Length: 194
Image (cartoon, rainbow, N blue to C red; front, side, top):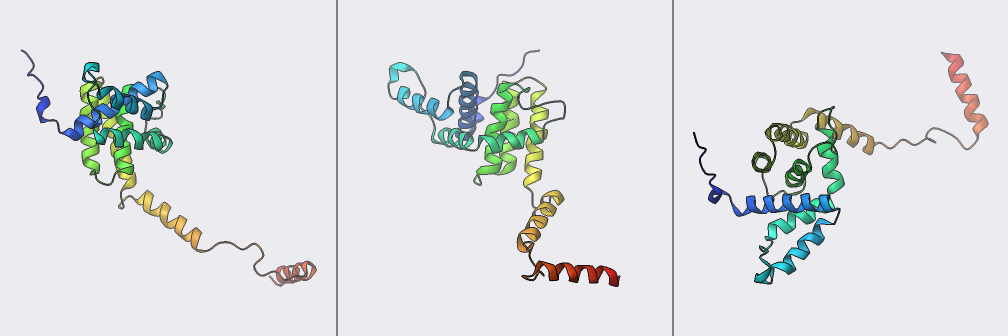
């Protein structure tokens, strides 16, 4: 039984921009160069039709620039939700690149619905990575989305605790007089009363 030909025409311009951004992030990591520099090089090369380099879509440039600027936060979010047996450095580079694109969209691009970022990331993983990648990428991206959710009890509890701490700063000199000896005498009389 033969498999049907993939229908690449159904992919939107944004999907293709995400795919190109993942390619560039992968290349940048493999070559240890700045991904924004790769984009700029491709823009220059694409101006000459003899080079055979496809033009860089605006959204590809936005993703690559955004992901490069927020790389530490993105990698921290990915690493937080990986299995205990895995570290960010152990997963395949192509999976890192795909997750970086999707996590950037989830955390830093309000124009893209979280569900869209998740589905597109899983589809890229299905297309470019091994069979095990799509399920764990789905799980990581879903966890990142859930952590951003207003319904998340962990998020709202943490934010509420931070707000309470921020509202009432602790003053270490509260209740003290200018005379330390008088303060000590008052403390010892308070403790003897109890």
